[in-house]
Image (cartoon, rainbow, N blue to C red):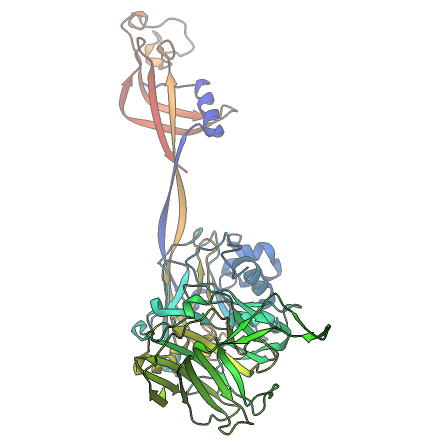
Length: 580
């Protein structure tokens, strides 16, 4: 027998629309294979609405392909691009890479364990929503870049499930253990301040776990230019900071307060010019924890009048480290001095002369009783001392100066790292390695981000290896089948919602049937029914449940696995589950 709920179920459907039901979402995944030849731009013209298509309809022919976009200067990299790079770049920069200070302004579109910065150039792979599902499943994206004539441009990319894209050609055992890293200041995110912002931002990002608050003093006197060079090409990588009357003020100093028993290392890249803007002394400060600055005193008064924008300074007799450049007025011009003092004893080691206008990787470290200066991965100077007395103090920590207008350093810094351990010669060699194939100087295999919900993979890394990632032989879409292109896979996501509705029938309801077999002349319009249907023992059986909307339209039908007797002495509930 069949059973029909009629208008009663319309009430149940109203409850469904009001949320009086249980919903359990789950995702299903489908594997998609991608190759260079997959991306026929005309194919995507007829599918789905992607965010870029909605925002920038003039670019709709490009959706589903690869875009190589330029920096915040908004200039085209390739004139043959069928998409305006500034459109996608603006969207990425303002929607996905909003503010690096995530502790103050976390973005809702990303996760806190995702590393976020956008380098000067990026390549973007777009999987249109509605064509390959709703987005990309975590941990499912992989891609291989192919370059038949240059082995250094063959690399694999994978998704680490945290929103980061990584290059699997890196040997991560060559990364110095980050648990010892007290500070990691680079300047790659400052590409925005080439010409993009009218007002320079007065902070730089510390990418260590400590996330130190690092302020730029005199930000108008700092310029961001091309960064450190690759070892085997003439190309530069990333952005460096060129100081000329500015310096960095590190607000939290206690973790850098090394005692005479502590080992530590200061690693940095530096480029020294022939002259310094300040040559009041025979030296200029690179790293200083020697001076205590009264931050509340901006003017020093002498004989009752202001003498200028100066800070009151107090030199300390004991300090954990002091690294200086001996400038051209020194008896040892263009050498570096690394010192530690307890007030009773001062231990100092001095490097050989550095060439001006050239990049050097420098490591100044104390390990045991040995004070060392390494240049470009090679031990340049060392001396052994037994330090007696305390070397800690409560002084400020400055980079590129000492908190005053005199003694500031003029020159370029990049990739500054401070460790609370002495580094091995092997670790120092990794930090000084900025080869084209694997630039270990950046100490990361992360080369970009993947945004799962939007279906976008952004290869954005300052190393020149990735400048034209996924773009063919010359970076101009010249794929030549798969000789100069890419292959890969990802899983698209589709969300299904499992609904659960309870259909309630009181014992006095639905105790008859419209099955024509109960009528004597087998005519449903007839009045007379078989005698057994009038018996008090007659109960119909339910085989089918229908769901109706408010307009009494049938929207869903549920079949029972076996007929269910509708009793008139108890209430009856039927639970219906369906997926949408």
